[in-house]
Image (cartoon, rainbow, N blue to C red; front, side, top):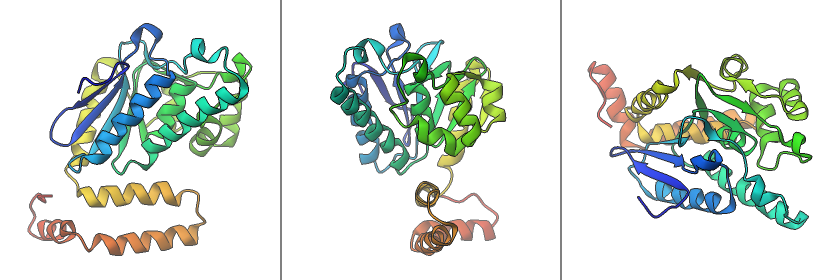
Length: 259
């Protein structure tokens, strides 16, 4: 798929996509055009009924995404800056609401907008050289792409506040300890491990996976009673698909389900 300048979108097999931010000379920094290309790529994935998993990574060996493009931001007016932030927030929200799991493969620096991009994915696999952080205050601005809201929801208020007001980066091992990333691998193995996990997800019922993602995304900010009521509704709805009968029949027959 070669219609993009700043990203690559590849369909690796019948149901797996990989989106790569491809600006290695500027450590994959996010400018307006890159954000719009990401939005168009997400629409392609959303329109493909065969899609099951989306991997997101950065090109090169140094950075996932080193941040937003400061050269583009430097001379923005307040209204232009707000619009730039709103564009990124809308695109990042699409990662969360995409109905298939989105896995960030953080293969180096994920700072500012890069960390915020990773946070908007469903979970993160990191390479051993990964470093994550929100250093916006070091530039005299606040986070603008969701970092002040998503980071506390993942690592807790106190740890997030420390990172946000100090600008301190965390390495892959600390990120693992804090629950910011799920797994850490040698850089050379990161894509392979991401593909293995994606293949495991692809073996499961696609409707069930999509409904489960919806439950987590929609339920996390609801009170427990309403969140569990939503789970009950979607649990019942999952029995309307052919997957339920195939999955349970396969279990009883001690064979692999054919979804």
